[in-house]
Length: 89
Image (cartoon, rainbow, N blue to C red; front, top):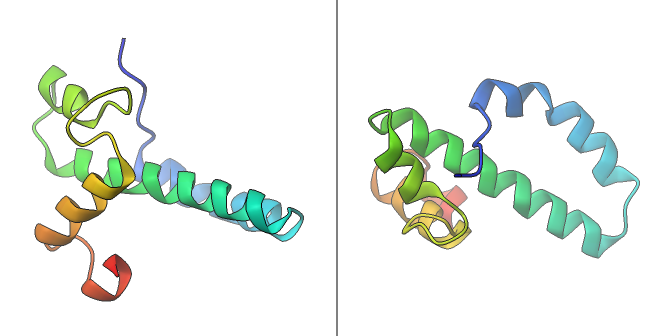
């Protein structure tokens, strides 16, 4: 079974809670939490542009999908023009 990718709207609503958590954590915890959040945001962004179905889910699956890593999601998001160069670098 594929991991569930949260919708962009859900991630956006959780941003204040994320901000609150990041203010109370160690530097390492902040990096790990923020990176995970960004990874999920990129997955959600890409999922919006993909055809709905198992193939899309399989590509984005973090357990071995071609687009299952933060780096591959960032690369594709940038190449498709979904994120600007300043966010990509």
